[in-house]
Image (cartoon, rainbow, N blue to C red):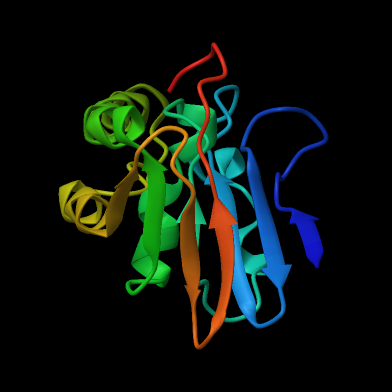
Length: 157
């Protein structure tokens, strides 16, 4: 097993981990750093060798899922596993992020914004798979699998 921190900084922000286990490759969270804008806010997705099998979202905060549309754009076959609550709020949060990035572009003149658009969010929605709280779920391919279980942690479900 190998776990790689893809956060672009040395602080909490663009939370993103790459889990490699046997032939499986999963990203745990794919956030956007709230202190930065544009590409500086992104995790180091370029460090992912090849494609990923899926994404596991711990909860619905921008620093945990704000870059998800970019990862799914690069990995159209990947499933996104999250609690039911996270799947319900993800679209609203990502749509709001587009509006914030458009406003940032107007204010700063940053031409790379927005980093994603509505069709990217639709791809994320189509990739989402709700996993009930406290119900173990096996995920994998080709006979290899891992078991994930979401728990209420008193933060965000």
